[in-house]
Image (cartoon, rainbow, N blue to C red):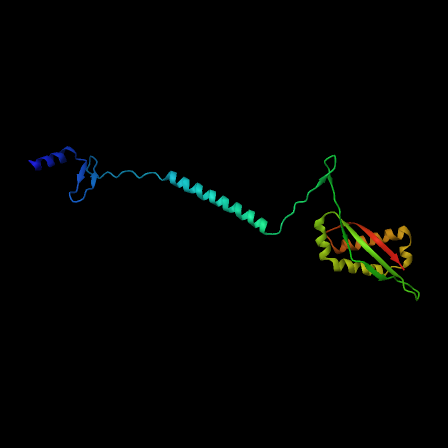
Length: 191
C-alpha cells in the first residue's frame, strides 16, 4: 500500500519530478519539459553601476583640471579699475632702463657726454617680460642712436621731443609686437 501512495502522489502532480537521491525538485510543464525560472533583470544594477562610473569620471576629471591649473604657472587675473561711469581705467606700468652714459659726436678736441635715465611707459604689466627678454637689443639700439647725436641736437624742448620720438621708434622696433606708449626721461645731463 505504501507504494500505491507514492504512485498516487506522482499521478496527482505530474508537474513535479523528484530524483530520489538528491533533494532537488524540478517543475515540469504540461509537455514534460523542465520549467526554468526567468532570470532576474539586471537593468537596475547596470544603471546604478553606469551612474557610479560616470560620477567617478566627472570627479576625476574635475580634480585633474583643478590640480593641473594650480600646479602650473599661476594665472593672475587683472583687476580692472572702473571710473564713476563704469569705464575701465587703464593703469599704465613704467619700466626704468639702465642709465645711459655716452660720448656725443663732437667735431672739436673736447669731449661731451650725455647722461640720461629713460623710463618706458607700457599699457599693462604683461608687457614688461617682453622688454626684459629683449633688453640687450633695446639698450644697443638706444646707445647706437645716442652716440650719433651732437649737443646741438639736444638743445631746447624740440630737441628733447625728437630724442623721445627716436627712442620710442627704436624700442618699439626692438620689442615688436609689444608696444611702448611713451618714453619719459628721469634725467638728462649734457657735459
